Amino acid sequence: MKHLLISMAAILVPTAMLAQELPTAPYLPLDLAQTAAQKAVEACSGEGHNVSVAVVARSGETKVLLRADNAGPHTVGSSTGKAFTSASMGRDTAGLAGFIGGNPQNDGLRYMDTRLVIQAGGLPIKFNGVLVGGIGVGGAPSGDIDATCARTGLDAINAE
Image (cartoon, rainbow, N blue to C red; front, side):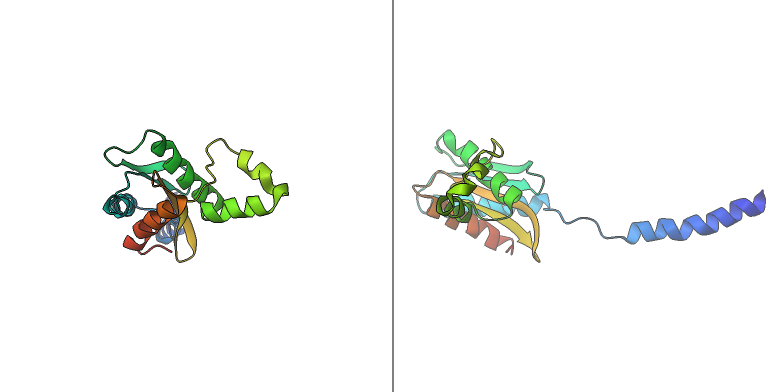
């Protein structure tokens, strides 16, 4: 019996050590999500736009939501939906809107999930080509401005 226990321990110890050395799945750290959101709010505020900024994880769950003073009530849902859409689809929401608009047969994409917001202002968050989340900005006078502010947030964390 003693020999059996020693043999089992000899087998299990290397396996346990190997399991600890395996890389973990890519994710978006909270501090980077906070930085990206803050910089995006600051970029839009600097231009006189009161926006909301949402950052979601790859799962679509909200990690950070910032709402500038005097941002409209609709901006929270807009920013969260744009971030969710970018994380879910792995692409920018302006490009997705253009893809659907130019291909009427793909209009059904709009209705796949009630959380999707297919308007400019959402960008995927990628590091080394790996999708880890999405950022969405809502409330500026145009989706292009929302997207520019989102890009500023991503640049602040060196995301693609």
